[in-house]
Image 1: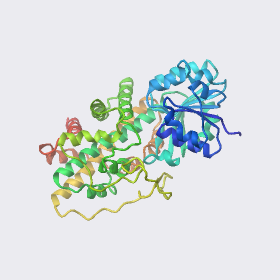
Image 2: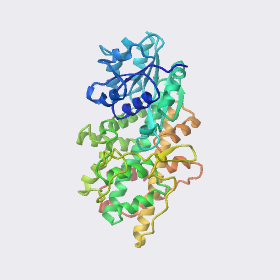
Image 3: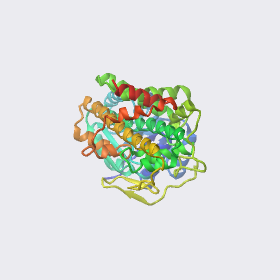
Image 4: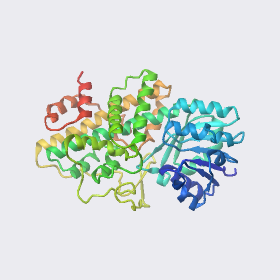
Length: 437
């Protein structure tokens, strides 16, 4: 089958990498971005610039939107010079954005009047910025014919895709529930590190201690370095994470899903969104806990092994490691980690062990809330297990649900340390209060 002609609208961090892959594989790609400067590198690689979404879409078999917020997608598809106006009958629109599915349904309804296929296809990185080396998964809902026509193109820029259903909205649900896992891990991790800082547990030792433990996740393993070097991760904006958590809570309200821990997470991200610039880096949410306690979480002379940290010239290693599920990540990240030598202070060791057990328990509970969202949308347990496993990187709990034994007693154990007498911990305090009811 001949390669599709692609129109790509949105040449940001993710869009660039996808366009590079398409061009490398011989695809003809027409591009548009609100900011022409953002498209310069892809044009240099062979993409063809167009002056509007409509012009970009003309003659294309597949139109991809990859944009930050729902209103951006609406404007670029249905605006005065929107892509729908330029698309030919039988072409497919595929949205990579994480957006409000009602927005997507509305656009799809208008597109159908012109005989167009519509797909929502939110993207998950299978390791930190896996999009840089085709290590992403796609959740797709909408017109199956459009998916079948575009699957070869999708496979060019990603590792795996799941056709979730013919109902637009169900793929967005998958993306939001998997993001919830990431965001909750991010907040708890920042507070765990602050406890360690104030109690005298070395941060680098704690990172080494968490990684081989049941509390490990892609956040602890691969995002910790962006806290330690103070870059807060250039790969994604705070605006997007605030939007995602807001959409998650709105979805829970629509489905009558309680989501108690998820609401605590959303509240903290909303606070960060109100305090910091929308275009700040997304891990800046951990700066809240630093400012709450007038301490930073820097490691002297530490730089994240990523082009999205302090060293913007860093190049990912070409060597990859592959786990038993087929998920990959670049060195220096490993499949297994060895625990560091124990701390001499037994009380500090008890704190460290209890904190990792608490992280695991919260990951377990939030996984339950995420599954409740999915079931609320009618997704099967089998599909949920698959998409979570292939979502935002590894998490010990979601990979070991068959063997993990939940330990509710860890709540009282954490409370017994009375961390709040020395450390301000808004998220953990709210979570402990909820779990003690």
